[in-house]
Length: 536
Ligand code: GLN
Image (cartoon, rainbow, N blue to C red; front, side, top):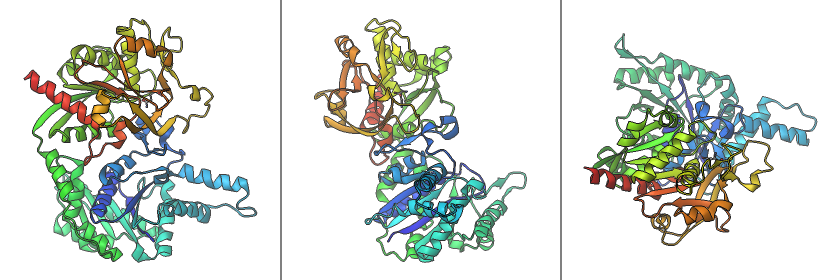
């Protein structure tokens, strides 16, 4: 039977609960424990697949095709463990399943209630993560303690403490300890109140992790311990890190959090100094080289819209001991000419995935700039589609070429709806999702980078390169270097003779990890580094 760690958040949102949970996961992996991570999101959407990045940031896709919360990206990057459909549930999903059971007659004669029906469903979803080879299940509860919509989740995890036995369940509460500049001191009251709220529900945290901008004094630590009913050694400081989120496992380790967990669960596992992780962090903090990569998207002002892309670029840098400065370039600023200087100062250009027409011409212009000026280029999903449109227009001479997503009446629909999508009406969970195999042409740049001609990557799209236009594109010199194994779908394109010009219909960023940088991103940074040194 697995042990359970529940991670809740208090005081404010955006504390980095996902990164903290993922960091705890990393500590346990280094203790040779087999873990699973689950995220519970209290909102009512069935999944985040239909939410826009302003609402939710990036939608993270798993191998089995679930559209999930971006915290699952942190889980995979920090722990190296794949997540799945069983790693993320929303209130919407839970209610949906309960209501479907009710309609089917599963509860015939009964009144369906929050307790026990919704809480039972939540507990069943959490326990579904306890496969036979799992030692610890870590469950992050989204939102902030005190939110109405989070109450059923807190009630469910309270019940689990009773049912599993208090020694088999650990509650970790992440809180915020603000520094009040005018008073010149940190304040513990918001944390006291957040923990009081939890205790009202019947949960007493075993560990308090305190996010803060400044050091937490011994005095403040004792105060937090007393008022929050947590032993002093279980009050852990998580101060803002100077360089990289990958420092956080080390910060928690230095304060003995993994040992605390071992003692609580009475687990005897060899200690680990996190040597592999430490070496990686050291390389991130002390890069030998620096490059600038421009990411041309329509959400360039949002932190979270391209989370996995930004992380994968950082990993790509690690492969070359290179620090990657990411220049966020607004696609619309390229259209208006305001971003010309930005394009000119980057050593590599990445066009990420996206939907809809806003900024599309700016993305296409930046592909053209990369192609004509020998600037290393990586296109991702919509980025591949932009590369194909640009090539069709400016090399094949197909004026007005476009994707039918953008222009239904285009004279040259070089990107069009996949046939399987034509009958699709519902928008939730209906794209071509999850891991799909791809066959790479022997001798191609892609095959060289991957070191293989048969690969698998995650997908999230409805449109594809039009098969009718393939001969024309190829005749003009664009290499269609990857296709689905049956040859029906173009998966990868590249431009022989260019220093680095490659685009994929997939989302390789989801599989990149700090201890295993993805070859396409490592390749981009490598080529950018070459350009940067040659230019000097
Ligand atoms: N909008 C495009 C499609 O649906 C690209 C999707 C994406 O970039 N994820 O095919």
